[in-house]
Length: 579
Image (cartoon, rainbow, N blue to C red):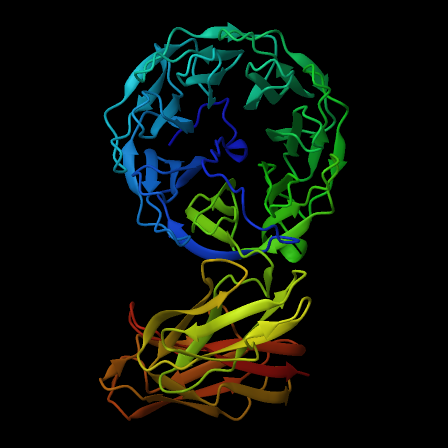
């Protein structure tokens, strides 16, 4: 698609709507997070929200994608069904609310259109489907939309960024809106959040933005009738990305948390009159996208901050900055999810009373379940096994489970599914601060891409925790797995060494190609495998010669390629030294 000139892809818009209350659950010392699932979406990830769109008590996810918005219904265990897309006009922002008070969640989309400029409401049918759009006019094309009741009439309203304006549109209670009330007192708005910053029971707006070389944050106090006062603006040092609101120090005055565009967050404590203290900045573990969410993630009564981050060593995941309850934050703690993490949102995905995280990326949604006092090392992003020959057993991979709580952890069961095996040192009880090992083995009986689960039932959560397992299996047994040619004079050829490939499957196979890494000139091969049917139990051979072109250590890989859709063996590593 063609993006309008005012749109910056790395500043993608989203609204995270928390619809679940987490009160009444015993508070762990620190939450831990387990990567549960990845759900493919159409390309997009400009905006994301959580909500129960089919009224089954399970949170679903909606994300703005390339040709509309896509809704994936939740399964209640942190996984989602395949998304269903509703086509819309060009848009990069959406929000979720019940705009006609029928008990079904609706979706409002901020359209980037003109002549006229509009927002569109898609009324929900209560089953995850939506009615045709209801359009309401705005003043200019819209970059961002959020929801709130700005005139306290019980009908949901919206606030939009339509530069140079921040505009409130009062809801009529049927999915339509009254004409916008425009306010142009903040220059260069790009993100906002809704909260009451002066305790007058009227909703206000906190906004961040940039214009020219200036970066700023502002608060626009609401008058309670759908109009906003002029912005109380202060300059900031770094380029902002997003902003969220919450009372971080428990003084009854709303504070603001800002995410910087290239990493780091800032806390602006509120004075209770719409003004903010100067920022206190906190580092993140890596460069992130500045998309912050504020929530009590460990249920200790203190608000925490989560933000995507590329951690140390460029690992992809997110940081949590645990709140101390006095307006300060602890140093960022990194959680790896194994994938890029884009737009964050918070909600209880598996109904265990613990707040979980979801992240929208340009290829899908990643869910990270809160496991309370249980932590896993390494992260429980899928344990991936290299290519394994059928009817053989892989080397083990180990995940350590640690009880980071203050009380013993009861473990009811640890089980495995799929073509995998498991052993564990975890017993019925695990002392505070102790850890135990869960060992996984891959023993495939059939070729292809295979998956499985290790399921842990313990007292950390009312729902099981999972370690996802994945591996690929082949019917080709290659021996040896590596060749070392030792020292060889540059410009001379070594004696050939032989690699044998055996078909251990039950049907014939045909190699589409066999050879050394492309553009590699230090090793060459000849074979009687390519294009020939190798029957079950039969073998073919490849002869490899080392002919170094330079001095020093030289290496390459020998590949056995099967037709598309079949799994070939792991490549044979080739080594030698030119002298």
